[in-house]
Image (cartoon, rainbow, N blue to C red):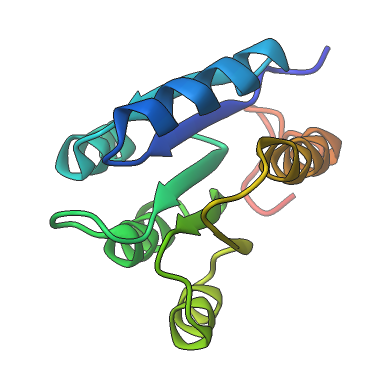
Length: 137
């Protein structure tokens, strides 16, 4: 049986969070949204998510800081950066720090949905380790 995919969405625009939540819940993902990036960081420290979608430009911490935090805490989380301030430099920086993709706003909801569902499928295909198996097996 496939376990549900857990998605965290962080964007300081409530409407973005609401629209994305609706799209991904309709596609069977478990979704938590945050308009406050500090609250999101605190939740990311407590709970394991499979995928993080985060806006780039927000109050402290910004999307790059969240990406760096996730890489330190749970490097297996797949991170997608969305931004209205896309530049080659910010895209390069995000990808170098471990983002799986970088999408400029305004984006088509279908484009982001398809990307996240592809990532979710890849995650589902990774065999889960049994809790009684020794580490590294």
